[in-house]
Length: 391
Image (cartoon, rainbow, N blue to C red; front, side, top):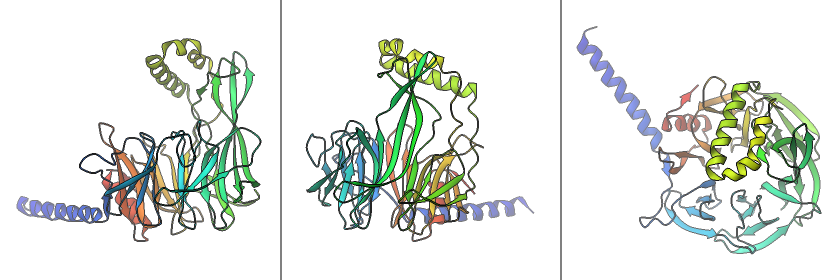
């Protein structure tokens, strides 16, 4: 083939690729603030598509839920920081969602209110659901059910136990069904993982690396899918906690934590804590040097969510690269699509694939991709947008 012919073929191929990339952007929206900066995003923790088609973003940077139109234009904000009902006491552990009758609810975890606030979509408070527990707890996540009840993930007070020269703290997590009056009617699953280390029995803790997760999602009527991230197998449990079935996925098995992994974690913690609070490091932080033997393998799963088409979107580690993998699986655990992508908070809403990226300066961008009930194509399009590997 002559050079001119090769050049012509190259131009044609380049044009096809450009056309394909342009098509992926036709269903792509980026949420934008107003010209005066109103609606600017600082530290978005969560983005959801509301029942009205608008996008709702929980921004812990200024403690507001910000509302954007279906085409990404900023509209308004609600909630805000405060001590009373319908306000955020702390947003660094808050989550929100929508009820089956098109109301917005939010809950808090770290130093926040011990209730679920339910509001109109315009932000007006309807009522507060106080949870009836006689122990200290935090609400890590909640999902609304058809009958007005909630699936609620609780975290309870950690307990310390002596382990040689230091203390290890066990953190109990629980997933339960809470009725419309706030009463816990059934517990689905509970765990006690060791998550913190300290040289004291009453505080001064540091998060341990490579600890199990506690991930779940509603999975049909009166069932949830659950994992601790330590196996490629996913468990389906009913609301009474009975194992309905278990199936294997294409996720890899956990890898062992090496001494190199531990040393890297220790240096990272030391540099961060020393720069912020040298005295705290000298009093509490040095305990990490005594942590010689890891308790667990590396967890392989960081999130599970269900999709409008009944699939599963699983976010896990890629053992063959430095990135993360988003697996789209069918209800039997078979792979539908897979993307290695540097994106966070990835999940499918009723009409969109939602995700967050960050530029080189750490500025967040929230993306919405219309999926038109073709979730595999939308996931692959996300890979094109962030320059990821697609399988």
